[in-house]
Image (tube, rainbow, N blue to C red; front, top):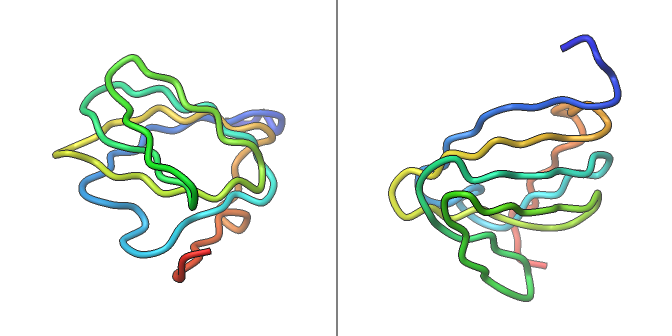
Length: 94
């Protein structure tokens, strides 16, 4: 997309992402819609179940990981537009 204010993508999670630790998006806010499958959104403080039709809001700077039971398909909208450089994997627990 040419639009700089927002972007979207579909992600398929199989198992845990990242495999160890967490990820943080330093710049963008994310709104995530569960298209298919079920699993968990994990933060350093909790593990919440997610399922088809569910929405997850991730604020910029929030630390999280995904865990799928089988395949989990997500639609992710980010604002401002996503840049892979702002997506940081933290390999050790916080």
